[in-house]
Length: 120
Length: 107
Image (cartoon, rainbow over all chains, first blue to last red):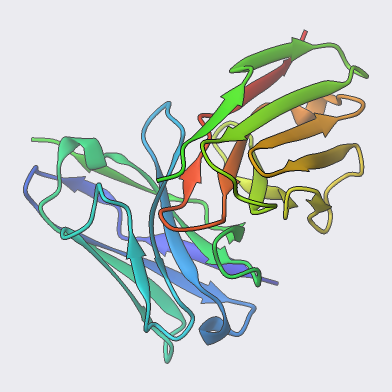
């Protein structure tokens, strides 16, 4: 059974940093792209970042480019995102999602999400 | 970037009704379009991929159609458990973009 489970959310001050992690199981981790999608309270879905199965290619939304860094550890089947220079508009539930076999640009399994709150 | 729009923003229908949601892309995306369902307090789940292919385990009352810029999600006979918000997403190119969502509830 495919599972993805996020951790690391919490309250952080503006300008601060936070690292989210996602533990994946039930599939061959290095064969699939993985991504992060966020949802601000009461709002729609916003794609944040994607990393290829090999980890060689990374993609970012303009809103986080230069501040967030996505990475994956194949030995631990773990996806991470390092979030720096956090802003109030980064407040959201962050979902980890497994890329489908179709070029990895859509997501067939999602975690339950972890809440990040940026506030003083 | 490819902009995605959806209409209507919300729909209220009776059990057994046919419900149609439209999604439009700002430029042609062939069939690189997926639909997700999100129930309150839950993560999204994949319903339809490649514009018209049903994800495994999804009831057959859900269907998708379209290509290029105009797409449709149809629920042929609305059930109480279909109350949710539905999002389209273009999977043609990065940055990936979602529609604003359509909330479906029971009248």
